[in-house]
Image 1 (cartoon, helix red, strand yellow):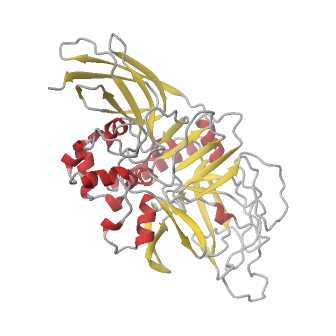
Image 2: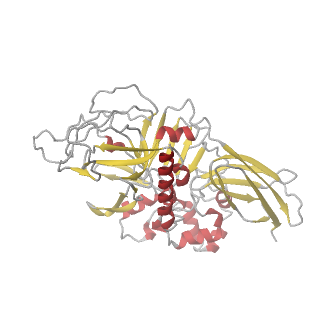
Image 3: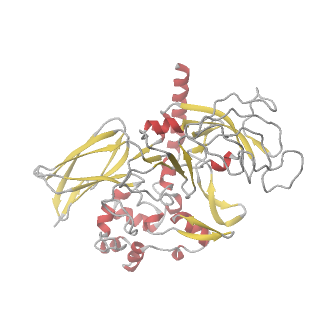
Amino acid sequence: MRKRTFAGIMVLGFLLTVTMASPSLAAYSSHQNDEDVNNFLAVYPFAKSTKLDDCSLCHPGGNITEGGKAKSYGSCDYCHITYGLTEPHGTVPLNGYASAYLGAGRGPDALKTIEGSNSDGDSFSNIQEITALTFPGDPKDYPGLTPAPAVVLNQERILKLPDHSEFLFLNASKSADWYARYRGAKIRDLLKSVGIRREATQITVFAPDGFSKTFPIDVPDPQPASDKGYQYDVMGPYPYGQYFGGLDFVEYSFLPGHLYFGNGIPDRLYMLLAYLRDGDPLTKGKLVPDPNNPARLVLGGEGPYRLIPSQKIAGSPDRPSTSPVVGDGWDYDPLKDHNAEFSIRSATAIRVEPLPTGTTDFNWIEGGWNLVDQAKLVIYGAIDPRTYHVWGKVTDSNGYPIDSVKITFGLLSLGQAGEDTTGQWGWFHTRLPEGEYRVVPFKEGYTFVPASALISLSERGFELEFTATPTP
C-alpha cells in the first residue's frame, strides 16, 4: 500500500511539473494574439478563461460535405477546415454579435457601444449576457437557463483518484494497430467520485473537435463476434488480452520482456481515462495540418486525457482495411474487435445521461480547447456531486448593505452555473459543486470592487465581499 501511494505521489508531481512548465493559454492558441479577443478581455476582464474567451464568441460553427458525407465543425475547426490555412481572417463567418461589433467600428469603444443591443434576438442585452457568461451571439444561450449539474476536475484532482496501469492492444480499422501501456483512472471510479445517479444509463465522451462516442454503463456479457460493432461499457468486465509481437504492420512503443508471441497479457483491463502512455504524459491535442491534405486541419496528439476502451473480444492484430490483401491470415477482418476506433483523444467532457429534467446541455463542438489547454475535464448530467457553501455580502463604501444585486457564478470553460440575489441586508448564499468559478456582481447603476472574483472549490466553502459604488 505504501509503495502504490508513493508511486501515485511521484506521478502527481511529475505531471504537475510538466503542466506548469508549459506556457499558460487562456484561449486556444490559434486566437492567442487575436486583436479582437484582446479588446474583449480588456473591456470584460472577468471573462478570461471562461467560455466567452474563445473563437465561438464571434464565429459560428457549420457543416461542409467531405467525400459525400456532411460533417459538423465547431467555430475553430470549421473556419480552418472550410477556408484553409491561408484564407484571410475576414472571410470567416460571423454571428450577430461580431457583425454588430464590426459595424460599430471595431475596438474597445465599439464593445461599449453595443452593450445595450440585443444582437442575437433572445430578449437579453449584450451586457446582460456577457455578465451572465452566456453568448451574446447565440439565441439558444441566455441568462436564467438551468444548467445540468457539472463538475470541472483539474489535473491535480484527477491524479488523486486511484490509478491503474494496463498493457493492452488497440486494434484500428484504417491505420496501424498498436500495443502500449497506459496509466490513468478507471472511468467507473471517476464517475463514482462525482456522484453518478442510479438512473444513469450511458455516458457520451467528447473531444474538442466535436468527435464523440456513447458508451453504456453496463451491458450483458459475453458478447458474440459481430461486424456491427461492440458495446464498450463502463463497468466491464473486459477479457484478458493477447500479445503478438514482431509484426511489421503493428506499432510497439512498449516491449514487455516477459511476453512472447501468442502469450496472454496478465493485466486486468478496464475502461480507462489515461494520462500516461509508456510512462510519459500524453501529448496535448491540437489542430495540425492533415498529412493527406495540408489545406485542412485535423486533431493531432492524444492528451492530456484519452479515453481507452479495451477489447470486448480479445483477438490478434490485422492489417488496415486500406491495405492490399496478402492472404497470410493477417488481412483486415471486419469481425475483429477494432476497439481503437472508439477511443477518444484529448477527452474534454463526459455527459452522464439522461440529463436531469429541465436542465440544459452544452454544445461541446464549441469551447473545448480551453479545457485541453488547462488540463481539465468536465463531467455533467445525471450526477449528484458534493457541493460547497459560497456566501458573501455586498455593501457600499460606508458599510451599508446593497440589496437586489445579482451575483452570477460562472464555471470556468463552461458558462453560467448558478446565480443569487442579495437581500435587504446585502447577503447572498448558494451551494456549488467542485470547480473553479468566476463570480460577478451586477446591478444597474453601480460599479463593484472587485469587478469579479475567481474562486476554487474542492475541499471547503468560500466567503466573498464586494463594495458597490453608484455610477456617476
